[in-house]
Figure 1 (cartoon, rainbow, N blue to C red):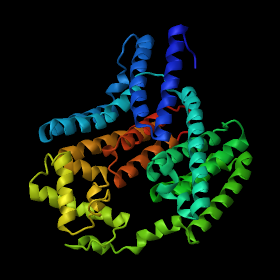
Figure 2 (cartoon, rainbow, N blue to C red):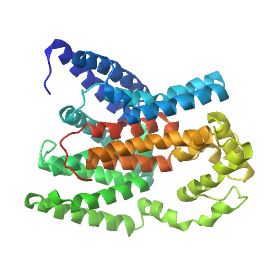
Figure 3 (spheres, rainbow, N blue to C red):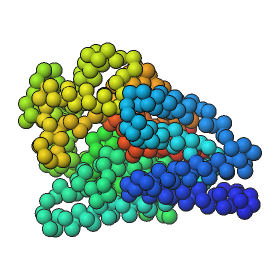
Length: 430
């Protein structure tokens, strides 16, 4: 990247450092580091834009996506101030401020381009590999002491980082997405061998994390990737053949042997979908992920009907309270008194559209859909496969998690689609 003068050189160095800190916070789950680095990126970026254009404010801050994020944040903040006590309202407003700050930090200047992103992603890959190796090492130690192989899978695998397996799976997938895209363009990470080994390593770690959504999406993306034109070139045929063999072998092991990953997929089909229609349950009744999420599509409309709150919703606290009352009235598992286990009472709707409907009513759900439309529009207009893949996965992710209810979910939802969108020169076509 071409830089002018000492001031620009200093700003460039600072932004690189702030982004590395942001990635470290994401990978190692240092929430304070992530929050502080976002603020520093934004402030430094504003100065960068002033140096570049003579204005602190970039025109990109008024594009569809950041404006829709601001509208949602403003509406939810007003509801919080009206419906909840000051302390609760300020806590939720602080949490959801990432919805505004992340797009502003990424779009506030023209610092991010193909060159700087490739530089930053090298640090991101290094941090991610370090975190994965750390988790594997601790899992090996735990297995040697206990003989329990579950330490290698799902939440247990990333528990040393206090990470959520599905959230961490998204980080791994974004790393693979970048590596595959660079390989297709003939750009290698250090060398062809290292590049290939990183893809294999992250793919295996992704399998251990056992996220059904991410694994299925990754399989679909690989089909697209292998069938795309450039992979048919002669120099890629050996890589293609080897990849297909590895993928087929891994698929056989995962889906046709008895293992924790296979168990998580089989669990989806073992539950009775008709269970969600029952009026009452026993605390012993178990809901798999699909059953529980389908149940939410029944409970949320019931709550809004009973409270006549379809237009503006119930707010954060009242919404969760009414949801808990529904769990209690249906005699669902409520944990063990006197212990941290509160059963289903700790669960929200696990769907951001439903969560927006419950807390913000029809208005809130429409504003959330505008954010989704803005993201998808941005990806499709750029016609970049990596941007489309990252964006579509994030949108699917919002269908299985209330991602705006945690800082980590907000960071993933807002950052990576924008970040990948700054990569230029990718092949046309989706």
